[in-house]
Length: 469
Image (cartoon, rainbow, N blue to C red; front, side):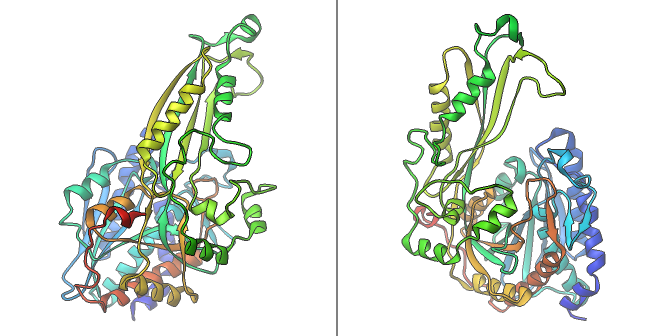
């Protein structure tokens, strides 16, 4: 039996193992789930050990990460595989078809928090590693694995681990399993990610909630003041209206604009997927360009006052909002946070107090698309999915990708393995089981293709400042 035959023969067992992992609510952003994140790390470590790797759980200042390796493939290159085992919070809970940590199979999809982001893709390469271990007894490449437990909460544990263990993590290619396909039919190789800069703004008025009849008309309502502040941050066409926000934004190269225009975006399908009556965004750019190559300012949540059943007629003491900005080359997270915070304070009325708390951030990254490992991945994806991959950027952020790029001196290889309609970060997150199976097969093929390249193929390259544009 060869590795791909092994995958197919053990399909149902692997599906159930993924469901078992999904049942662990590893929400890194919520302190109450710290124990669950630790249990998730233990689960993964046990599966990697069963797949023939030497495995350890690395304690960090935040949540634990899992490191594993299988070396000894003489004359073969070394690959570093990356993913994360923590997941997003599940709110709003009442929008889920079933409890978010009780996996549900529906119409060929597996529903549950973490199915596609990122436990499914991670478990796909674990399946591939196990397939070699249980059939040939060896790997065609040397493999190192690092799976962090705080990607969804901006923790720095993995960043510190990479910087302190640079020599230990040395590899010819860093493979990231955390991006979607371009379409249902076409897998993808992603060469660019937007960065992120997150913050929270809190507006405070009176020292306590006030009776809206007794004090209304004499005291500023912090919730209304917050609404006015936020309304100054974008214009009606979706362009960010904060002074200096666009100062460092790099233009989209002309050749890329042509490639993106050829890819296009089915706007009707996009409306159907999102449920909106009409798309919205910055004029002068296509929907694909706005998704991948233009910065954003988004309000992720608003809180304050009374939101329970019935009414409570008050002027709330305070109100706040969580905000995130997606960044593009050549934007700096620190400078973006500075100009946004300055604007929020400047436009606030004198009748309230404004506090801004800066959150996690990551730089944008754009990497090379040539090189033997990229071509090996393209052949592997085409073999598994029956269609050549599309080269894409992505609008999301994977904070550690830029660290891999800067510290290890290699361009990360981001493989798009699951459907773009996966509802990541939303209720009813899902993963097509067919994609899960094909992703595992793609990793088997990629390991085989990479094993033919030799240990010295595409050696580490310390990137210049320009290489990250």
